[in-house]
Length: 435
Image (cartoon, rainbow, N blue to C red; front, side):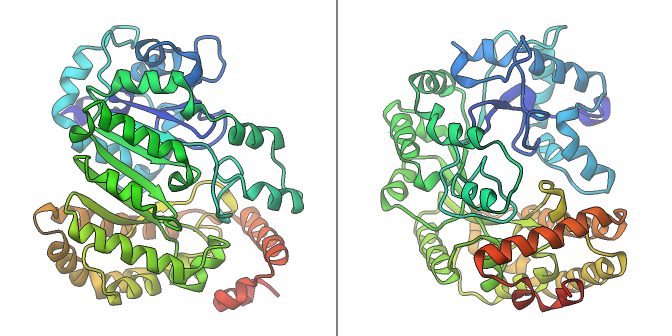
């Protein structure tokens, strides 16, 4: 098997291209924010989509070649630390998930790789793009790089950030440029998956133009659309365009149930969130090529309420939504890590989550199977549940992070004061830390 022969290999550097909100290249959306994680061109500058004439020139830049060589030499690329950190704790990483998905393709991909790590005729099957930073929410775990609206809050809280950087991202719509559309047309024949995030993709008009271009070019029937969205806006025209594509996966970004979700994803309103989830659920029920999922960032604000979130998902009257969330470990900012709490508190959190999983596991298996019918894959639920079990081990076993805990208290108080909110009202179990 490939993963036994090559210990650190991942399919993405061979078949995937990605773009950060500023139009710079990334190896993977999980690689992290900041220049440390962004890809560089052959001169050491950011690898920008708008600077390249064709995909081969882009795909054979120095960073791409280096990462392929490191993986073939069983080295761990710095930009891939997120996955390897999780694997070291027994969590099934995104890297391993992609390995399973593309296992049959890897031998041929490796065989077509030159000694310097370059590829002569790249066949891109996965395009992942963050379309700028236009967003209507100011989530506490986010930054102005992904939400322009958050910039003013950061300024009022004296947060350290580059004002000109997020302003430039907002104004420099690289995803609307003729150069981007030219590169997109080049990859369409081999493209199988197009993932769009933001900002908020449902607020970005170029998103609609991209879908229309793909349909007009005659390639929509072999492309699987994937989204991460705050589902505050669901344009009917976009729903109509989805019907032309092979498959659509829409990931609703929800951190918790009710007022806690509004607290984290300010200024969202749970009533509106729930209404739009039911709209999406009904549309998915009527259009079997559309699947609705829930993605949740596991962080200091919602970690104590995961059992309540699972209780809610078991009690709602959805027809088609895949109910068990895909939990994503919060990496940035570090002060929002689920591991910032004292050890004894974390142990109790982990125990509550595991007890909740034991209680509800049978429901999630039976519901997902019934709702998804022929599209259902039993291992989806199994993997997601085990993913959360693995995160519980990380919550228990990570070393205490006292400096981040103090930062968590400081930043929470700043946000609460600015937004006239109170963490202890939505999370009374934290009162012991906010005297």
